[in-house]
Length: 145
Image (cartoon, rainbow, N blue to C red; front, side, top):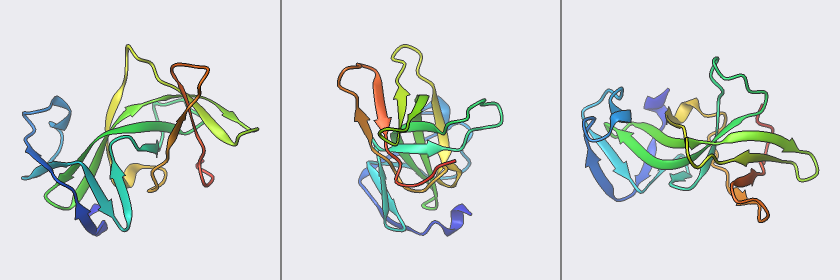
């Protein structure tokens, strides 16, 4: 559970309220802190990291869904949420053992995800594909699905 996350370190940041940002309205808690980074059990989460998200029942995805971390939130010094920009997973490239993702610049979908709701607790790194302006690839270090 999220009470067992054992937050080791929290970076500098700002206090926010649910009225500051629409997507925080469903968060329950007294204190909402938006640090630049947070380290949980030796793993650091920060803006720019990529996380593999558990597909919801409404998603018809065979491949994992990835999200780029845009903000980190800590609620009541216990619960960690990541605000991610969802990428569209195009395909798995067997030659490079990577997932190719597409970033739609006009209609980006965002989601607020609790840390325990990700497929893995380990952040990934997206690599830009030089010949395509909106495509990135992610090379997972382990089997995701």
